[in-house]
Length: 386
Image (cartoon, rainbow, N blue to C red; front, side, top):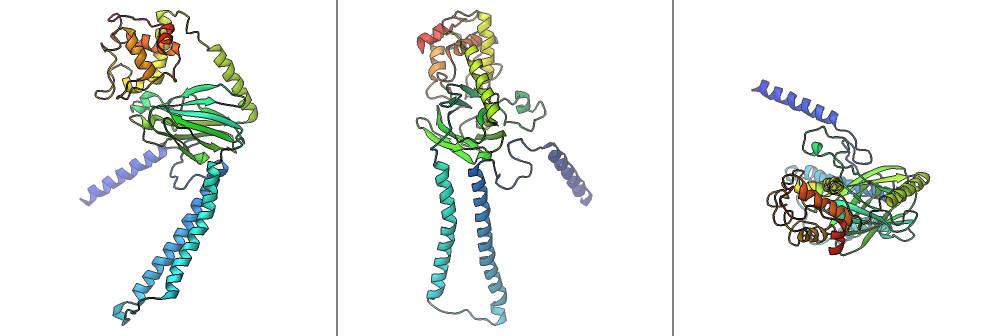
C-alpha cells in the first residue's frame, strides 16, 4: 500500500511539473504563480497597489498584536499556574484605548483610500474619449473625439475554436486575444464611456486599475493614463451569460507616432470599406461575406454546423419559422433581436450589407439551399425594414 501511495504521489508531482512547465506568463495579463495585485502601468493602478500593501501590513500588525497578546495571556496566565481571573465591571482607560486606537487606524487608512477613489472617478480633462458598448459577447468601440473621431469597430474573441474544443494546444494568450484591439496613445488621459445593449457587462483591465460596469440604458465612465507602451489584457468581469468567459478586452498602447499612423490607416480602411446599401450583390458575393459575418458574430450560439444549442439557441439548419420562411421575419429578428430569448439585436452592430449577407448565408448554407423562398436577401431589403 505504501508503494502504491508513493507511486501515485510521484505521478502527481510529475504531472504538476509538466503542467507548470507548459503554462507561461500572458503578455499584458496575469503571470504564472502571481499572488499579488499587479502594480500596473497607470497612476491609479500604482496607487491601488500601494494601498493594498499598506492595508495588508496594518492588518498583519493588528493580527500579530491581538493574537500574540491572547496567546501570551493564555499560556502565561492560565489557571494551572495559580492565576485567578480578575473581576471588574468597567475600566475607562481600556475602553478609551480600544475605541480611540481603532478609530485612528481606520482614519489613517481611509484618507489615502478616499483620495484614490475620488481620483478614479475624476474623468475631467480627458485627451481622448472612447465609447465602449458591451454586447453578448463582444465589445464595440467608437472614438468620440480626437484624431480618430468616427472610427468604430467590434472587438471579438480570436482564440481558434480548436483550442476551445481541446483539439489544439492552447496559446499563452488563450481566451485573452481579440481580432481588433482598442488602440490608445501613451501618456494621454483616456476617458471610456460605458454602456451595454443587452445585459450588464463590466470593462476590466487590471494593469490600468480599471473596472467599471456597463449597464443597458445608462452611461457610466472611467479613465486611465497608460505610462508604458505595450499590450494589456482584461475581461468582462460581470457574469453576462453563456459566453461570459469568451469576452476579452485587449488594449494596445502606442507611441504618439504609431498612434497617428494607426488612425490614418483606420480612416483609410473605413473609407475603402464603405458599402452602398443600394447596390445589388450577387448570391455568391453575399454568401462569402455572410460566412465571415456568421463566424465572427453567430457561430458561438448557433454553432458552425447551424445546429444551435438545444434548449438555448435554435438550430438554423432546417428552421422553417425564419430561415426557410419569407425573409421579413428573419430580417426583423436580426435587427431587433427576439424578446424573451438570448437572441441579441444586431441593428447597431452590423450594417445593412453585413445583415443581408449573413441572412443570405443562413438561407443557403448546410442543407437549407433551395428549400425556402427568398434565397437571396439584398442590403436594400434590410434597409427598408430598419
